[in-house]
Image (cartoon, rainbow, N blue to C red; front, side, top):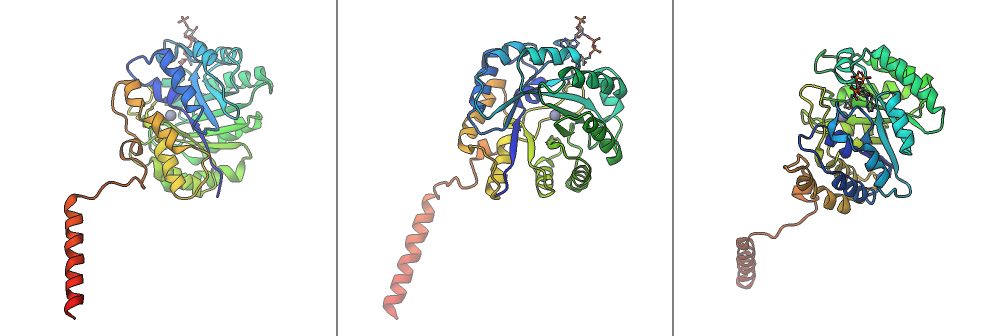
Length: 321
Ligand code: COA
Ligand code: ZN
């Protein structure tokens, strides 16, 4: 059974687009519950400008008060040097730096051209100097909602530039659900042929292709995935963004196929069922509502009657023969 590794992003990507502030205590209780579910990593929050992402303005308090479980890495999203200083102060296990492969999305999301982001993130990597592992998330790697297509060459080039700076991992993000499985297969082949970094795939289910894309990536050899409990999520600065691939739906599918996700699905589903109360609305995840595929339901009463009648007929016909 192939081992896969899950990174939960609901309290970062999931919450950042929610209209109602999720209280700090609820965030901490949720992260503590998620820590018991078998994740390799949890993206707890982001150290961004509180004006840009007001939902995550309590990042220091959340990082300071969560209970850290052995074997789980607690990572945080970081857009610039200021964010990196805050993340190091909070003893994050990993810094997840972010920039977009699309110039327009980078200007919308991070308010600077890509080259400025690259220079700022280079400074961060030098400042961290191996003290804490670095991952880089490349947004809009499968397309940009404002520019359209993004070439594979463009993604490979940015990935290579960060690889040359010695980062541990790269996350390839489909920020607004534009990827399709054929494109995923081609890009993961090209990335793995070129790079030795840990590769994580980050899909959004905006157009219903999320799980198909996860499967294409797994079949292409990828072992690490981001997912969001309940399927929450979206970048507030990417028009039309909606939820991430739902963690429990992805784990359920991969478990059923015989992959070793390391996750405790029953426990994960219990936590997932609390999500609507936490955010105050229904969430897109399906398995928490339907139950795992082997959840059995009682047959209607007439089935028993039909079965008894059929048995009786068979019995009578055997007697008469
Ligand atoms: N943490 C806290 N505050 C920060 C900060 C950080 N990492 N970086 C900048 N700020 C503050 C500055 O102090 C300044 O505050 P002030 O207005 O009170 O003086 C304000 O944010 C603007 O700073 P500036 O350097 O001019 O940044 P900007 O306006 O160009 O914004 C970002 C750049 C990256 C800080 C901002 O756009 C951001 O945080 N974006 C979040 C992107 C994101 O998380 N998107 C979703 C995930 S992909
Ligand atoms: Zn995302």
